[in-house]
Image (cartoon, rainbow, N blue to C red; front, side, top):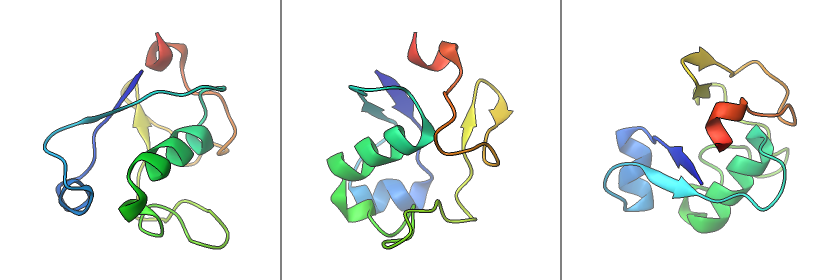
Length: 84
């Protein structure tokens, strides 16, 4: 289980209060996490990533373990502490 902190405007769009929890069946990568997030909250599709290219939008930052992972490859493994 991975805890995801969404900004206020995305929480409102997803109709959630507070953080969301996502479970990954496969490797823990940014792409897998965003796939799971958009699958669980389809109203976020096109907001976090482009509909066609699936590239994360520039204004969406990706942080884990007090590090900015926004410039990492989408298929790079997330830090172990995220999945433990």
